[in-house]
Length: 262
Length: 293
Image 1 (cartoon, rainbow over the protein chains, first blue to last red):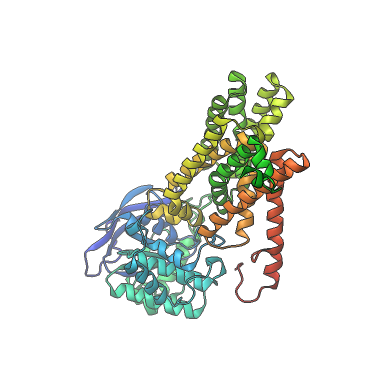
Image 2 (image 1 turned 90 degrees about the vertical axis):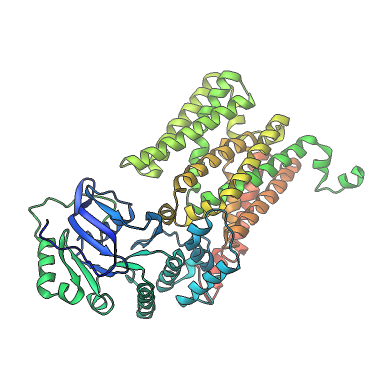
């Protein structure tokens, strides 16, 4: 689709490039023919109706899902450097682990299976826990945390991963307003540090407030660019129409385990 | 010296009889090797899978028996091969078909178990079958003891090297998959450790009882602490205590040793349910933060 402009092209070098990208499950495309780039340092929101392929796109970026067609290029960043906070975490919260150790997992790329936690690293862990407002809860089991606290711990772990590219899938799904406010401040902080942050979100008001750039997705790119322009009523209606009335592409898989609830 | 020690009733059976000392040494090896693996089985919610795997080694041991009689190396190699084959096959089917992990394991272990019983009953006596099913902790010879100690040493070494990996794999496997290539190594490495320890446990406690010294101490320890390090330590201590008491019970009350040990471990678990801080009774009374979200 050569007439369509790039997903977003701020001022920086691109960190991600999509080339005729189609992603899906069991050969059923969930999102198709994406074209474009994401500039390094972007703060990009991905919005769209249910089943629009938002979470699928994130999985494609991390490499968990191979493209059915086309490709995704990561420019100047390794796949394992991407920090990715999934909507449904696979964390077993009944696992006997305390907040400190959970957050420390974020250091894996530095310390691996054998490296020790020296004083500097311990201080970084403490700082990350402090930044998400969890100081004093270091030795609490993760199973004893509230939803908001657990998400704060996840953000602290992402912090320690020190990732140039951060992907957040519905990060504020079921958490309290105070946690949303604090964690959104952290996202702004990451943006300020020059990291690229891509978030799948459904709260449009939040997107308006926090995200300069937006990609509106409905199995294809509906609109992209400046948030206020992208989230116009006309665009949102069009996205809904495409998502609902897609009898012409028999895309919907009959059943697959990995429902895209995004 | 021996005179004074053997006058202590708790110790006298171990002083007087070498078979009791050997049994205790075998249990020591199992407590150090198999019990930590049991802790991870529990943490990965695979307690029943451990039981299934213990049955899966039966046909291999039986074929070893068929070829060489009650031969330690033949039954060990047979058990290892059968256990690893079932682990890999059931894992492979689960990952590549609509059959889920638990069903996949159940199918292969049922095939395996029935084949094992069939092979033994074709040639052996019911005494042999009892030996295989319930072990012979009171008849451990040098070779068997060395085998138990060797497998336990391997297991402790592997767990020590891979501890962080195993913890991460149990706690947040998808996260491990994203940040490291070692996820599959952790998974299959753990299955190998499991089979190794089940085969060791099988010689002492039999296929039916081997999982007992893995899961019961792990579950008991879980009721006392909520951090992996202390959990491993307490589980090993529970296993040792249960083995010691179980062997004494078996000696004094003339009970079969394997079930006596496992029942004692069960008793320690029930006791923990009543008394431990994370047991159902204490949880009910405890105020402040709770463990269930």
